Structures are given as C-alpha cells and as structure tokens.
Length: 433
Image (cartoon, rainbow, N blue to C red; front, side):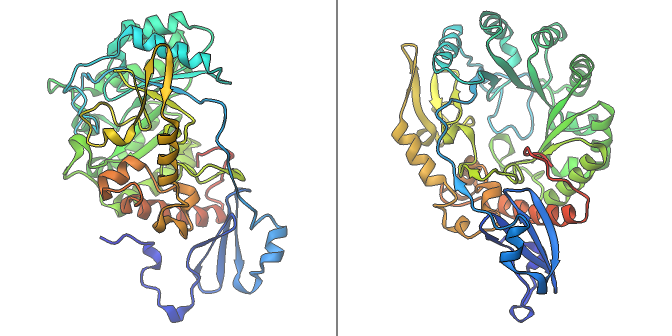
C-alpha cells in the first residue's frame, strides 16, 4: 500500500489546495479552501488564518518561519543502557527479541566494568538503565549489587514486564529506581498479548505490582503495545489504565518483528492512527501525558538533532550482555540479522573501545537530510524518518523510511495541529502532547 496523507489523497491539482510543506521551522497546509494552518516547531505555536492574510513577513513577526540550526554533537555522554539478559518469564506474542528462547545473562564483572567506565566519562547527569531482550528483574542479585555499589551517584531506570517478586519491587522502590511497566490493558488484552512462558496469566501479577509502585512512588509510567485486539477493546483499555492510576503512557503499534513477524494482529496504519488520536484525546481530558514515536520529536528547539535515537547519535551508550557496544538496543547479539550494522565496539580493559568512524558513518547514512524520501517532507523534523531498525525490517535499507510509520506520523501531526488551533491540545515544552 502506498501510504500518503489520507485527507489529501483525492485533492485535484486544479483545486489549488496548499499541500503540507515545511518552510523554515513552520509547517504550513490548507485543510479547506481559504484556511491556512501553521505550526512553528521552534515556538510550539499553532495558528489558523485566512488565505488572503498569508504573508510570510508579517507572520514571521508573530513567531513563525524561524531558522533551525542543526545541533552539534554533545560532548557529554547521556545514559548507559545495560542489556542484562535474554531470559524472560513471559512469552509475549509480539516480542521483537523472542525473549526467553535464550537464558544468556550479563556477568557481574561486565556490569561493574561498564558502570565504572561510564562514570569515568564524567557524564553531567549519570543515568543507568536496565533493560534488554528479556526481563531485567530476573537478574535480581546483579541489580542489587550494582545499585548498592554505586548508590548515590546515579539515577537508575528500568523497563520491566512487571512480573517480579514483590519484595524485590519494594527494594527497587526504596532505592528510588524509576520504573516503566509494560501494561497493555485489562486481563482480556494483557493475558492474550503477554502470557507467562508456561501459558498462565500475567495480568494479576502485573496489576498487583503496578498498584504497589503507584501507591509508594506516586506515579506510574506504562508502555503499551497496540494490536488489533487492544484497538478493538480500546475503551476498556483506557478505562483500565485510568483505574490503575497511570500518570504517563507510551503507546506504539505492534511491529512485525521477532514473534510479531507475520502476525495477524498487526493493526492497519489507519487503525493505529485512529487509536492514537483517541488515546491523545483521552490523555488530554485526563491530563495524562502521552508519548508515541510518531510525535516524539514534534517539539524540537531551534538547535536540532537529525538522528532519531540516542545510541545512534552518540548521546547514549548501549552494552549488551556479552560486553559489546551497540548503536541500537534491539540488535542484541551476533545472531541478530543486522548485527554487523549495529555492533560498534566493545568493553575492554575497563574502557569503551568505540568505533567512532563507524558511528559517524551510520549517523550520516540515517540522517533525514540524507534520505531522499525525507528531504522534502514537512514532518521530517518530527519523526526523523522513524526507528531505523524498523526501516531495515520493513524496507531492507537504512536510507528508506518505513512507509507505515510515515503514514501515521504525517497524519497524526496534521491532526494534532488542527486540534491545537481548536484549543483541544496544548503543545508543552517537552516531547509529550
């Protein structure tokens, strides 16, 4: 399918409708004859004017058509990601990593050496994140050791299935670890999406743990995958999220990777678009920030990075369980089909031996200013071409954007700008809507 901006698909040339385009920092389009919408990426400002009032010089004085400067790479390192294990107590139907097929884990020596090497880089705000192609809390002893040893100097973050021992969760809460839980919805959705490895239900365990975390930390950030099943039950999903007290949601469609490859539950792009619009509206009404990669970069400053992810831009370090450095946290080990693309170094003798030339080459190849289909796109500074791993799986190329993502990102951005003008959304200084 050739995904385009759906609301403009049937416009004829003679109608002279202004197609969405980017002028300096400002997205400009005409939804109906005579009405022009504008959105400034720099000032986070949306407006609607009559077409006869469209004068760039006057609009510039009102905060539109600003210059965008491309950011220089930050000399300060960002977070350190430790991919602790390939093992998992779940068998999620869409797991990109086929988590649980392997039981390989990171040794204490590699984890300790990685954190030591990271701190020697003198990051301004040290942040270590536990994750990987499995369930990090299975490595309880390792996590307890690392946090205890480096306690006081690091912000700790974790993404988890929520299937863990209650006493370990309470210990993590005591240590003020910031946790994101994978919660797709009520039992009918959660247990179908995310069953236990042996075939049992995960929902009861996860719900108990997220409620403990919400009560003791006063916040609850979840990451949710949208499938045809969850979209069909979206009202129940939203009610469930509210009932468990979520305070922030990251929502992404099911991608055809790993166990999700050839899945019949991958939603159509139109289904994903409509679901995200509904979720954003729900978030607005309930004052809950919503994050999605389609809008992750919709609010850049005037100093803009063109690379869609931290590890690839050099602003984050990813160390897998074997001690390799990766430019993508989803290329987990040498058996990954794109391992040779993403493996960029190794932890060795207490230092990160990073192939800087390879990383720079990857950055240049994947920048939206280098991708022909992105160069003239009005949304290029919003999505940066989307997740590059998904580009590879969907197109086989680093230099081609994923058409599914393009459809959702462009249509969603147009929808958000229109709703912002109507007072239904407020663009905030961060990357949530």
